[in-house]
Length: 308
Image (cartoon, rainbow, N blue to C red; front, side, top):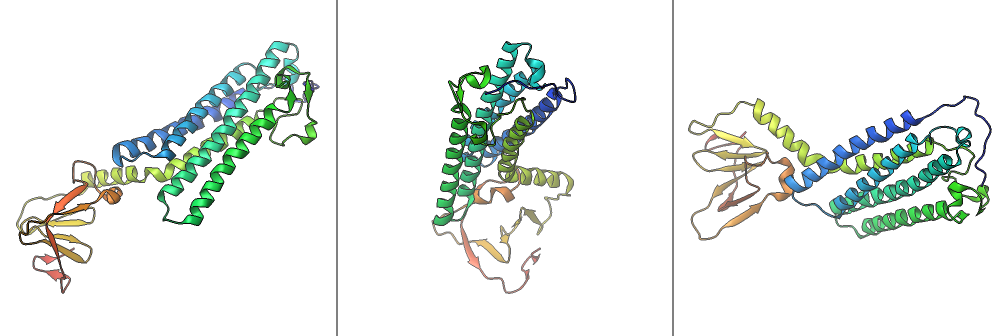
């Protein structure tokens, strides 16, 4: 494989700053998204699952290839290879960083897609067709990733010929178009890899942050809305549920729930599935034990005045 080229028309220009800005700004945003995702899953919903751990693995891969991109830019890899030919050791090192970083980028893209598939599987309604489709997409992403890595490292024998030159390599025309086979080191491909992995992370984390968003909204409303806890016959509204202070009535929608006569039986209403509409922790329990019986209210105005 030829690693030589003529002088570029633009002279000795470096795209190191461009590469570093894109890499680390996007990395910082991804780190915030993943941190908020785990805070939501561990502290609010308390239900981390495989999709979260696969996303954490994707974030680790992102850290690795971001560090490799930084070393690549710091070593002169963002310059045209023409200006690296005077130092064969430097040229070999930056080419090696280029190839190795792509392995971690491809792995991050594949694992990110698997995390998205697991998230969809987790929140979907039971559907065998969709489940098998998600399995197919996950396996395909992994196999394509493995195929790309093999195509990267197996196109020259030995693989070191990719950065040292020499050896026996495939015809560049037959190599996957995602490979770097030209006579210059391209920064564009590295930026594309960083963009793809980070956008997958952002898209996969956004749906998981809804409980956190709702919690923050309720927190702001509780600080800005007037509250009054005294007075006979007043009603207190909390996330769609009403409790009458003197009669112990509970209202929800168009149905009223009233404590039943003592029967020795207890009924538990588990509100965990409605966590995203509840106020912040400490304001109301996630599980409420009530002795209730259902009664039909004939009109919109009940015994204690307006229901709303």
